[in-house]
Image 1 (cartoon, rainbow over the protein chains, first blue to last red):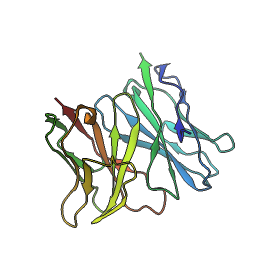
Image 2: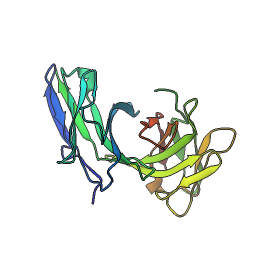
Image 3: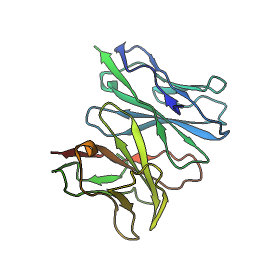
Image 4: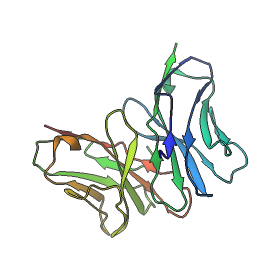
Length: 114
Length: 115
């Protein structure tokens, strides 16, 4: 089974609108961390936000927030007030406490329309 | 990009040659991870190293690929006798420790092209 599933290959959003990028995960561990990374067309991987499995509050970092629904095993990224510079690939990732690696989803390509 | 340095940024090799990819972790980080990204795909874990030790190489192909992180100097991912299927972006990431959920900080990647 896929550890991380991102079901939206591509998304479009109007500038200044909010957008939600979906991510579901699969783990039997009780302790794990969830991460979102942004990959612009230049190719680098930029860390955006982190949510721990025991965190009761949803993580927020500026215009980014993570909608964490533990029972549903979902960790959606919400970008508020989209900007043209937000156009990029977005990857959801997970690390289990018992493991060494990050598991990545296949990514969502976000295009912000002026 | 928070200091993880990878070089070269682009590397072109002919089939059968060797490719060496280098990664210097962020200052203060002693844990290095290598990932491979094929076109249109997410990153796939290859290997996790600490200084002078390979901790987890479960994602490494059994042949032609090797990695090291010597006491001095950068981590090296080495691909011998490259084939067309090795064309990909190779990312290195580092973290200060593996006991909790430090975000892994990535380098800009090396784009390997095999002619």
